[in-house]
Amino acid sequence: MSKIITLITDFRTSDGYMGAIFGVIKSINMNLEIITIASNIPPADIRKASRALANSYRFYPQGTIHMVVVDPTVGPLRRALIIDDGRYLFLGPDNGVLTPVLKNNPDCNCYDVKNPKYQLVSASETFHGRDLFAPVAAYLSLGIPPDEFGPPITDPLLIEDPQPEIMGKNIIGKVIDIDAFGNLVTNVPAEMIPENPIITVCGRKIEGLSKSYADVQEKQPLAYIGSSGTLEIAINRGNAANYFGAFIFEDLKISDGGKR
Image 1 (spheres, one colour):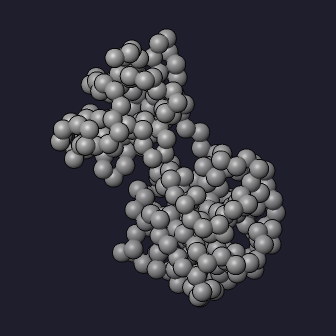
Image 2: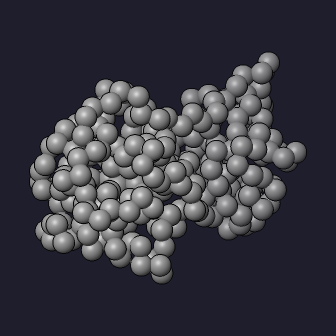
Image 3: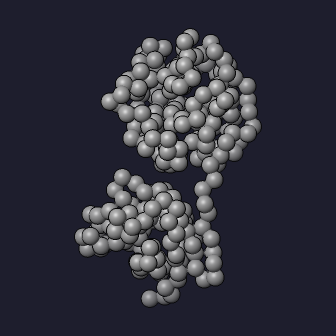
């Protein structure tokens, strides 16, 4: 039996939608903790929700159930998935939001949730967060095996992020996320970056990598390896997205500055 269910969603607490989800879960299993990882995902932003999941799920105790409800294609034609990766259970729409789990463990077992026994009797087609995902998560927490909820599948939908490219002596990467602080998260992994890089973003250059924000003066830009293992761009006590005028999928160039 699981003691923790987590939630990532684009619902807001002010609308009562999250309260309804919590209520359904607790009415089935009172003896668990529900942790909201993120409830401020921009509406229908599947990629943002997917990154929130990727950045957080591995730090929870084994057996945690992770539920993601960012579901712009909600309805009878969109599958609902349970994924079992051997350590955790994941629950969410088949719209690519669970991609990090599937890429980290290609041998995951996936199931298409179809059994009406584990859904609310009067389930709507527009609020699967309350009527489908919440009760299924609660029943999973009671130890009901995933294959009780529906048949196995082998073709879950994946989101493909752009990959960095090598063009001549340069690496061309992209901004794949902008966090709440305005930091630019890129798709360039640490192992691709030369020892003394020169990084060009929106026509502005940053020389070298910093270890922390304190390495530069206030309001100055810096490049560093973020907690997810990829290159990030920030402003010490500022907003890099505003400073550079950068957006999601903005290009950046990394060249080798040579030995110092």
